[in-house]
Length: 167
Image (cartoon, rainbow, N blue to C red; front, side):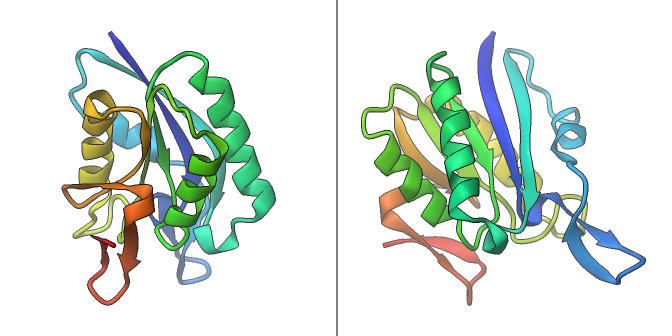
Protein backbone atom coordinates (compact mmCIF):
# COMPACT_ATOMS: atom_id res chain seq x y z
CA UNK A 1 0.00 0.00 0.00
CA UNK A 2 1.50 3.36 -1.09
CA UNK A 3 1.04 6.16 1.43
CA UNK A 4 0.51 9.67 0.03
CA UNK A 5 -0.02 12.78 2.10
CA UNK A 6 -2.43 15.44 0.84
CA UNK A 7 -2.03 18.84 2.47
CA UNK A 8 -5.00 21.11 1.88
CA UNK A 9 -4.45 24.87 1.93
CA UNK A 10 -7.66 25.96 0.20
CA UNK A 11 -7.69 27.80 -3.10
CA UNK A 12 -10.27 27.60 -5.84
CA UNK A 13 -10.34 23.79 -5.75
CA UNK A 14 -12.01 24.01 -2.30
CA UNK A 15 -14.31 27.01 -2.92
CA UNK A 16 -18.08 26.85 -2.55
CA UNK A 17 -20.88 29.16 -3.62
CA UNK A 18 -22.41 31.12 -0.74
CA UNK A 19 -26.10 31.82 -1.26
CA UNK A 20 -25.99 34.38 1.54
CA UNK A 21 -23.24 36.54 0.06
CA UNK A 22 -23.63 35.54 -3.59
CA UNK A 23 -19.90 34.90 -3.99
CA UNK A 24 -17.62 31.90 -4.28
CA UNK A 25 -15.48 31.59 -1.17
CA UNK A 26 -13.39 29.26 0.95
CA UNK A 27 -15.60 27.96 3.76
CA UNK A 28 -15.37 24.20 4.24
CA UNK A 29 -12.88 21.53 3.23
CA UNK A 30 -14.29 19.21 0.59
CA UNK A 31 -11.33 17.24 -0.78
CA UNK A 32 -12.16 14.16 1.32
CA UNK A 33 -15.56 13.85 -0.34
CA UNK A 34 -13.92 13.78 -3.78
CA UNK A 35 -11.19 11.37 -2.71
CA UNK A 36 -13.91 8.89 -1.76
CA UNK A 37 -15.11 8.97 -5.40
CA UNK A 38 -11.76 7.73 -6.69
CA UNK A 39 -10.66 4.12 -7.07
CA UNK A 40 -7.33 3.97 -5.26
CA UNK A 41 -7.01 0.28 -4.32
CA UNK A 42 -3.32 0.37 -3.49
CA UNK A 43 -2.97 3.95 -2.25
CA UNK A 44 -3.52 5.23 1.25
CA UNK A 45 -4.17 8.98 1.07
CA UNK A 46 -3.90 10.86 4.36
CA UNK A 47 -5.46 14.32 4.19
CA UNK A 48 -4.28 17.11 6.46
CA UNK A 49 -6.33 20.31 6.37
CA UNK A 50 -3.89 23.13 7.15
CA UNK A 51 -6.00 26.12 6.13
CA UNK A 52 -8.74 27.08 3.71
CA UNK A 53 -7.55 30.29 2.07
CA UNK A 54 -7.53 31.92 -1.29
CA UNK A 55 -3.86 31.88 -2.27
CA UNK A 56 -3.86 35.65 -2.72
CA UNK A 57 -4.50 35.85 1.04
CA UNK A 58 -1.62 33.54 1.97
CA UNK A 59 1.08 35.15 4.08
CA UNK A 60 4.71 34.30 4.74
CA UNK A 61 3.53 32.79 8.03
CA UNK A 62 1.12 30.53 6.10
CA UNK A 63 3.93 29.40 3.79
CA UNK A 64 6.10 28.72 6.85
CA UNK A 65 3.26 26.59 8.25
CA UNK A 66 3.13 24.61 5.00
CA UNK A 67 6.94 24.23 5.09
CA UNK A 68 6.86 23.00 8.69
CA UNK A 69 4.20 20.38 7.92
CA UNK A 70 6.10 19.23 4.84
CA UNK A 71 9.27 18.91 6.96
CA UNK A 72 7.47 16.64 9.43
CA UNK A 73 6.06 14.44 6.68
CA UNK A 74 9.26 14.16 4.67
CA UNK A 75 10.83 12.10 7.43
CA UNK A 76 8.46 9.29 6.43
CA UNK A 77 9.65 9.31 2.81
CA UNK A 78 6.12 9.38 1.39
CA UNK A 79 5.19 11.67 -1.49
CA UNK A 80 3.25 14.84 -0.69
CA UNK A 81 0.51 16.54 -2.71
CA UNK A 82 -0.48 20.08 -1.74
CA UNK A 83 -3.78 21.52 -2.90
CA UNK A 84 -3.23 25.23 -3.35
CA UNK A 85 -4.70 28.28 -5.01
CA UNK A 86 -3.29 28.81 -8.47
CA UNK A 87 -2.41 32.50 -8.17
CA UNK A 88 0.51 31.95 -5.78
CA UNK A 89 1.08 28.21 -6.22
CA UNK A 90 4.45 28.72 -7.92
CA UNK A 91 5.55 31.15 -5.17
CA UNK A 92 4.84 28.55 -2.50
CA UNK A 93 6.52 25.84 -4.58
CA UNK A 94 9.68 27.91 -4.96
CA UNK A 95 9.61 28.63 -1.21
CA UNK A 96 9.51 24.87 -0.56
CA UNK A 97 12.24 24.18 -3.10
CA UNK A 98 14.55 26.64 -1.33
CA UNK A 99 13.66 25.12 2.05
CA UNK A 100 14.30 21.53 0.91
CA UNK A 101 17.13 21.41 -1.65
CA UNK A 102 17.79 17.69 -0.98
CA UNK A 103 14.33 16.11 -1.21
CA UNK A 104 13.94 12.35 -0.98
CA UNK A 105 10.31 12.30 -2.22
CA UNK A 106 8.23 14.31 -4.69
CA UNK A 107 6.26 17.32 -3.47
CA UNK A 108 3.46 18.24 -5.87
CA UNK A 109 1.31 21.35 -5.93
CA UNK A 110 -2.06 21.27 -7.65
CA UNK A 111 -5.33 23.14 -7.65
CA UNK A 112 -8.12 24.20 -9.96
CA UNK A 113 -9.27 27.08 -12.11
CA UNK A 114 -12.90 26.15 -11.33
CA UNK A 115 -14.00 24.76 -7.93
CA UNK A 116 -14.65 21.05 -7.37
CA UNK A 117 -18.31 20.30 -8.00
CA UNK A 118 -18.86 23.19 -10.41
CA UNK A 119 -19.71 22.37 -14.02
CA UNK A 120 -16.52 22.26 -16.05
CA UNK A 121 -14.28 21.98 -12.98
CA UNK A 122 -10.75 20.82 -13.59
CA UNK A 123 -10.29 20.05 -9.89
CA UNK A 124 -10.93 16.31 -9.88
CA UNK A 125 -8.73 15.79 -12.94
CA UNK A 126 -5.87 17.74 -11.36
CA UNK A 127 -6.25 15.96 -8.02
CA UNK A 128 -6.30 12.53 -9.68
CA UNK A 129 -3.30 13.30 -11.88
CA UNK A 130 -1.38 14.64 -8.88
CA UNK A 131 -1.96 11.45 -6.92
CA UNK A 132 -0.63 9.41 -9.84
CA UNK A 133 2.32 11.77 -10.38
CA UNK A 134 3.18 11.48 -6.66
CA UNK A 135 3.77 7.78 -7.22
CA UNK A 136 5.81 8.14 -10.41
CA UNK A 137 7.95 11.27 -10.13
CA UNK A 138 11.45 11.46 -8.78
CA UNK A 139 12.15 13.70 -5.76
CA UNK A 140 11.62 17.41 -6.36
CA UNK A 141 8.94 20.10 -6.28
CA UNK A 142 6.44 20.05 -9.15
CA UNK A 143 3.22 21.67 -10.34
CA UNK A 144 0.72 19.21 -11.84
CA UNK A 145 -2.18 20.77 -13.74
CA UNK A 146 -4.23 19.87 -16.82
CA UNK A 147 -2.36 16.70 -17.75
CA UNK A 148 1.06 18.28 -17.45
CA UNK A 149 3.93 18.06 -14.97
CA UNK A 150 6.21 21.07 -14.49
CA UNK A 151 9.30 21.47 -12.33
CA UNK A 152 8.32 24.41 -10.11
CA UNK A 153 11.26 26.49 -11.31
CA UNK A 154 10.09 26.17 -14.94
CA UNK A 155 6.40 27.11 -14.79
CA UNK A 156 4.08 30.09 -14.56
CA UNK A 157 0.34 30.64 -14.57
CA UNK A 158 -1.02 31.98 -17.87
CA UNK A 159 -4.13 33.85 -16.74
CA UNK A 160 -5.28 34.60 -20.29
CA UNK A 161 -5.33 30.90 -21.19
CA UNK A 162 -6.38 29.74 -17.68
CA UNK A 163 -3.62 27.16 -17.44
CA UNK A 164 0.03 26.74 -16.56
CA UNK A 165 2.84 26.95 -19.11
CA UNK A 166 6.52 26.07 -19.16
CA UNK A 167 8.97 28.94 -18.81
